[in-house]
Amino acid sequence: MKPNSITFIAVLTACSHAGLVEQGKHYLDTMLRKYNVAPTIDHYDCMIDIYARSGLLDEALKFMKNMPFKPDAMSWKCFLSGCWTHKNLELGEIAGEELRQLDPEDTAGYVLPFNLYTWAGKWEEAAEMMKLMNERTLKKELSCSWIQEKGKIHRFIVGDKHHPQTQEIYEKLKEFDGFMEGDMFQCSMPERREQLLDHSERLAIAFGLISVNGNASAPIKVFKNLRACPDCHEFAKHVSLVTGREIVIRDSRRFHHFKEGKCSCNDYW
Image (tube, rainbow, N blue to C red; front, side, top):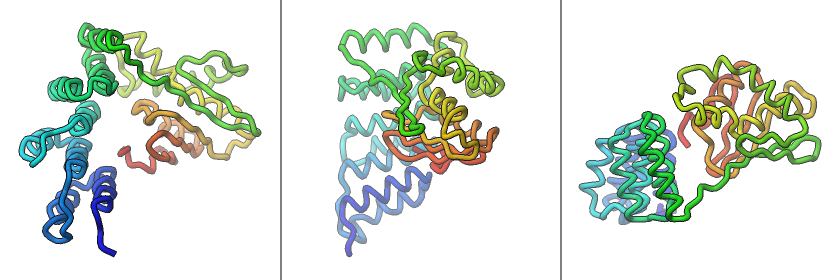
């Protein structure tokens, strides 16, 4: 069977998640020449994502300026995501502004710059992002995680304290305080740091550690309605290493299988 346009979307996306920059360039370059499949803006957006995910932000920006299509909202969204992943505030500000101009309804154009500003300690700029969202009546979808135990669904949101075993759950989280104090969770804004400690994934994982089937060796299986939080992703890796428990998180993008301090996604998702 001959590959078509959709085939190459899948191949380029796979290259992005595996960090295969040169292979991605090869497939994009040979689409038309070898397979007679004309690249579209979607294929170029995949290549932008490949560069951005790999931290090659300057190359991604140069690629966007030279590609035969004008960058669309997805182009800037992929680039902005890379800026957040690799903590590049300067380029992230540019990408955020471009994304808000092209698609003012996309919350990523506000949330990711907000995250960058808080990471950099620029609280006034971060507050401005939230102000813009409020003025445009935009709301980030509430993060929710859930886990099944003995046929019953246990649902958690950020800072949730309504579960009957809340005290036990937070006591279990306290066992990982040493990791929370590490470099990954350094934050000079107390409110922001408190939110990180109370994220829904962590609450679900802690509940799993104390409750799932009473089996200390059973995998902990968590579901989440949004993309996995990078901080919680690191937390799950640490828990799997310290406790020896396997953890599976199914977020809106993919499955994450944590085992012995590593994730099946290789930190690409």
